[in-house]
Length: 114
Image (cartoon, rainbow, N blue to C red; front, top):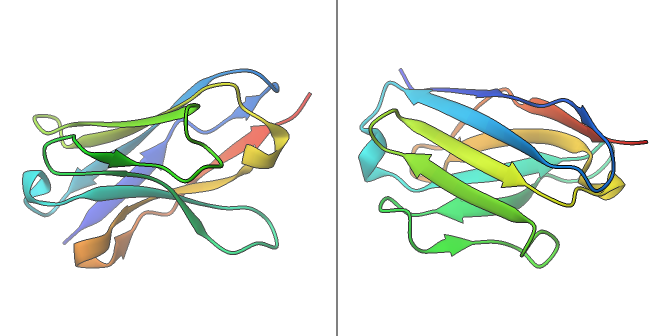
């Protein structure tokens, strides 16, 4: 059974940094690209980062490019999202996704506020 468990979300001040994590299990982790999505209250879910099976290439939308960095550890079955220079508009629930398996985690809340 595919399981994705996000963690690390918290309240951060604008301009701050945060790393969130996704622990994966129940599938051959090394064979699948992984994505991070986010959903702000009242808005549609959007992709914010994608990483291939070998860690390159990575893909980001313009809204986070240069501030967010996705990485993975194939030995630990973990995916990370390093978020720098956070802005209030980054406030959202962040989800880990395996698109080829159509699987989602339950999300972790990131709030950027002074």
